Image: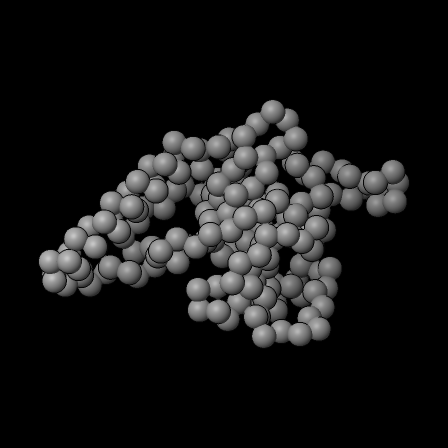
Length: 170
């Protein structure tokens, strides 16, 4: 299932979600049609595709997709809505498990599996810090102050959350 699409800030790439077949990696054989099948190469991924591509065929082969540079992140369930942060970081909302659990906010980063899912409290803290940084930039600009040399460089001034191989409830 392909859904969720966003154009890169430079307009050169499309980031597209390919949903997961499952909510936690269980076998989904569709009544025996796909015996012992969990995820396949074309599922549970965020693809980065050239915006100028036409008649592009994505093979159901993880190595071929990686070698072509099409896989941006893996292990996502169903990232149905994307947004770019002012510093160029990519975030996506994602369906939680089929159980009575909350949806997630993921910080999608190239090459990571399952990215980083944040709790609501962590997400609010990061957004508050980043908003304060942006307000301070606006205040400096209004005063005519020059920006620090590191300002605007992607991720330089931010502490990244710990990488995990499991998901946190949002």
